[in-house]
Image (tube, rainbow over all chains, first blue to last red; front, side, top):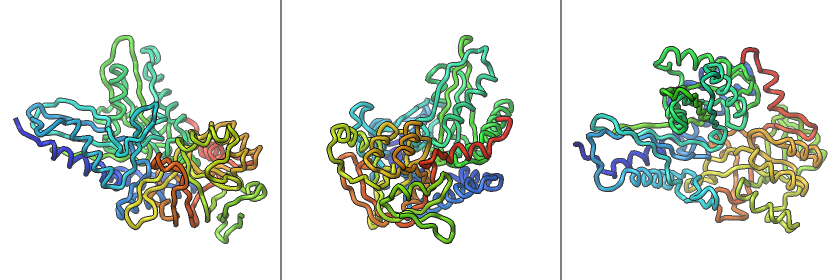
Amino acid sequence: MRDIHVSSITDAVKKLCMEANYELEPDMLRAFDRALRTERSAAGKQVLQILKENAELARTRRIPYCQDTGFVVCFVEVGQDTHVTGGGLVEAIDEGVRQGYTEGYLRASIVRSPFDRVNTGDNTPAVIHTEIVPGAQIHIKVMAKGGGCENRSKYKMLTPAEGLDGVKEWILECVRTAGPDACPPLVVGAGIGGTFEKAAILSKQALFREVGSANPDPATDALEKELLDRANRLGIGPQGYGGDTTAFAIHILTYPCHITSLPVAVTIECHAHRHKEVTL
Amino acid sequence: MIATATDGIKEITPPLSDADVASLKAGDRVRITGVLYTARDAAHARLLPLMDAGQPLPIDVKGHIIYYTGPSPARPGEVVGSIGPTTGGRMDKFTPKLLALGLKGTIGKGVRSQPVKDALRQHTAVYFGAIGGAGAVLSRFVRKLEVVAYEDIGTEAIRRLEVEGFPAIVINDCHGGDLYQDGMKAFARDGA
């Protein structure tokens, strides 16, 4: 058993929240550069150039890349040989969010109830997904998930007869309907298979893979590449002003499913794809 | 007032007249200098019952532009934090009523509904796009900021901004022009 005190979890989450909002990950910066080489639209190129400047300004001035500093989504892999001491894991994560958002001049965007819509004032609570894994470490992944693009995420229960073609059409339909609203160029996460909730969680988890990397499964990699090419033929382009760069990447995670089912969840993520991770 | 600068970009200073608005076409790049009011979901929800009851609003919208944004907090010594646009479509329910009261422009990102596009035509008004997610860059154009109503809703309060050269692009003009549709048509390729 390895003891991990909650204060180290809080400190880690606080830092991840702040850094994610100020510093876009290198995979996104590389995606901007790749797109600038291929984009035909002058307006689209200009948008990409401004977004690069935006990333640089955010990093150097320590102000958030986007004013929507997101809903904090945490994936936590807890090694089964660890022992969290000094308090609860969930409270420790929320305390990290609270400190990060308050001390980091990040926007409070969470309301305490979907109905009365009173702002909690410190961007808590986070949405936390935990998994128990072998080992004596805790791995924390944090995403600051924007609301505008999240609003364009969608779900469909396809039938097995609709099959692979149905999956392709549905994912492209999600990109099409996300359109200019979701701040393209997008990063698209798709969860295919499992149950209703499993597919939705996979669609979020898929976003953590490095943008521009290959899917480890060759068949799924080919599917991702085909879908990305087709999505970028839609013409939506950066900010929807028209162009070739509607999405930077489409990431897919799959899971076994019931003989009856073919669930497909699609999380739409904007170019402000803020994700960081750490191992404790 | 609108004047075209030597670089071809239209310089806009609110308040705007019908003739000003009519001169703007989808795809035009603009720079706005002067006053913008911020309002998003929660502020619009509070304006609605006032409009329905024919009561005065906390801001005079006549000739003015509303910027759909909820800024992040300013660091000490700064005017504002990050301040990019939010999705305009969520305000569709409220916009035609504001345009009927003389609001001449809105700034956001994303597609507007047909009733809003119809209202732009009917009331001679315009929908601008600012670059969504470029909130750090856009903050550099804000010179002054004060909360003028609904302080209790935090980032969603109505703020009066003074901006200088704030960059935007005409998405929907008052003649039915639509940059999103034109742009997509121009760049769509077979095989999607």
